[in-house]
Every structure is written in structure tokens, then in C-alpha cells.
Image 1 (cartoon, helix red, strand yellow):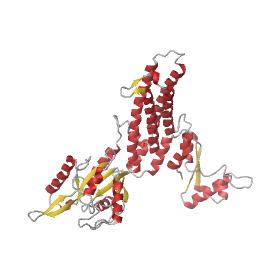
Image 2 (tube, one colour; image 1 turned 45 degrees about the vertical axis):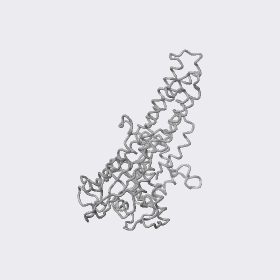
Image 3 (spheres, one colour; image 1 turned 90 degrees about the horizontal axis):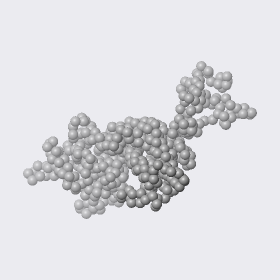
Image 4 (cartoon, rainbow, N blue to C red; image 1 turned 90 degrees about the vertical axis):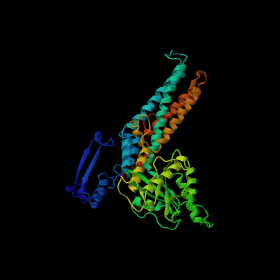
Length: 478
């Protein structure tokens, strides 16, 4: 009658009551099903508040109101339908743009991570309990093990647990590459073809291409899906000496662009070095193709972080080379320079491309598609789960940055414990008399609290502090 009195046709709507046992939030839910027209939905939403009015006949906002951002997810958390790791995975699912991002979100939404974290927390609680029993009852009770043997047993467990936590941290970092995207810097001399390559990859004129040197002055970044991986390609200013061969100083704007290019290249996950084919007259009057490695490019590569960055080499403009044999010769020369240590090594072979030929058959080793397929293979290696049993650790790729930071704190607390009980760190010997069991037990408590904060479950006094941030960031609901 209420809806009818407000002009809503009853034939346009029917209701379904879903009991709490079958809902995501763990509470009874009343669903209203109606036509999807904007005006129809608006009229129903306007009528609903009048189902509960105060003595003045106005809607009672204390009884019926709009949900706050993330409120349904918050209720699901409090009703034990989701833990914090699954809430974060829900946010990742909603924001996923590529297939790999979707997959990592699915991994995070499973029970693998929370079960693993809870198992570790229980191990720490048990180990801490053994130490505290030793503190409180060592003089009054008879233990099956000597205090030294008991401490050694706990320490062995902590060593094993720390190795697992470190593996989880490593995989979380790899998973973060999938989540935020792989940063790829296109590095090279002016007119090496960086902007042309970027345009061919994204399929549009994203960067200005000109025969004039120094056209690109700032970083041009474009996000694109390559084989299911979200990649952030950065077209950088060409690097060259500050003075030309004629002694002319290049402009301040171009110098600033070069500074930014070097800075960006040194923080990229992958640096693609483009080396163009140069042509010069030979002794017999024939044009001869050769490569020239820019000294500024080589100097920048030497500053890279070899632990975190991968370098890929691509010879560009091979359409200027007369034959396949010449292409192979040039590739072999560059590969030799890598072998000699003149340039940083690469996980991929030296590739040869031409930005004028576009994307073609995968089998053609001198084609852009072959180049992209090789990059995709590198991305798979960079984001594969590490550990003795990689399949068992795939779930940890779904760990978020928040989880990784807490895992690092947990690992640090475990390290503090080991430093306290192992006086001879080289031989891992334990001196019972010099071990401060109170501090050792406190380190285990702190490590367990870090794991509790990850899932939002268990005994941790500070879990409430992270709830608002997690729900606002990962579960904005409409």
C-alpha cells in the first residue's frame, strides 16, 4: 500500500527474503526485484525510507538508511563470513583489468592464505606457551626435557617458520607486480625508435615520432595488457652527450628530460634497451650496417639494481639490414658484448625488430609479436611462485602490500628471538643461562600479533585500527 500510495506500481516489483545462513553478510536480506529503468529504481528508493517514520510522519533514518561505504563487507567480516585477506581480495577482484590480475584476486579470495597465517600463529602461540611454562614453573615442575633441550626445540620450530615467512614475503612481492602492473622503461639514444615501438605496441599514436633528435622531453607512460599482464610502458627521452660532436650544448629542457629518463629507468622492473641499426659506407663503396652503443645508455645500465631489474636488448630498424645473415651477424656481435661483460646480462636473447613491419606471425624471430611473446615469458618468470614446491605457494601471490609489510615485521620479530637465544650465531649454540626467556617469549607474541593483524582474527589488541582503512580502500560498495 505504501509503494502504491507513492505512485509505484506493485506489478513492477516483487520481494525475496534470504535468511542469514545463505547470505554473504551473515544477516537476513530482503531483496527487491524490479525493472531496471532509472525512474523506476529512483521512485522505489525514494519510497523505502517511508516504511519507518517518526511521530512527525518523516522517515526515521535510525531504522532505514543507506549503507555506508564498505558496510556490507564490514558486516560480513564481523559475522565471520570473510576475513581481512578475503576483503582485500574482493577489492582486487572489483578493480582487476587483466586476466592475471583476476587470477591473483581469486587466489587471495580462497582460504589458503588465512589458513596458512592461522597455522603459523598457532605454532607461535604453542611455542610461546612452552617458554612461559618454563619461566613460571621451571623450579616447581618436572619437565620431560631439560630447559636447554626445550629452548632448542622451540628455536628449531622458529627457524622453520621464518623460512616459510620469508618465502611468503618473496611471493607477495612477485604478486604485487601483477597487481600494480609491471613497469617497463624504453631506453636508448635519440631516434632509436622508442616512441615508434610504443605506438606499435599500444596500437595508436601515443608518442610523437620525428626524425629530429630530442623530440621526447618527458616520460610518456601508457598502460597496456600484454598476454594478460598489465604493463606500464614508459617512453623515455633519448640519452646522448650534453655536447654534440660540433661542441654545441644541448638545451636545458632536453637535459632535464634526460635526467628524468635515467631516474625512471633505474626504478623500472624491466629495462628494454633499443639499439638502432646504423648505416655507413664501407671500404668497397657499399653501405654497411653496424651497431653503436650510446655511452650514456651504457653508463645508466651500470647503475641498475641487478637484483630487482631485468634488462632486455632489442636491435631496432633491421629493415635497413640487407639480409637475414647480416641480422644474425649483428645479433651475435651484441650477444658477444654481453658475454664479455661490456653490458649487463639479459635473461632473454638479443632480439631484432622493425617498427615498420608491425605485429605478425609468432614464428618470425624478427617480428614484434616474437618480441612481445618473449617479454610475456619473462613476465611469467618474474611473477611465478618461488619455493621448493611452487604449486603449494601460488596462493601467497595473492598477498597484498599490507600483508607483506606485516609479514616482514613478523620475520623481524622471529629474527630478534633467534638473536636472543642463539649466542653463537655461527654454530647456533644455545646457552640456557644467558637467554632472557621473557624477552624471547615477547618476541614470539609480537610475531603472532602480526599474523593476527593480517586476518583480523585471533587475539590482537590493535586489529581494530586497520579495519577502517581496509574497508574504505578495498570494499567501496554502491
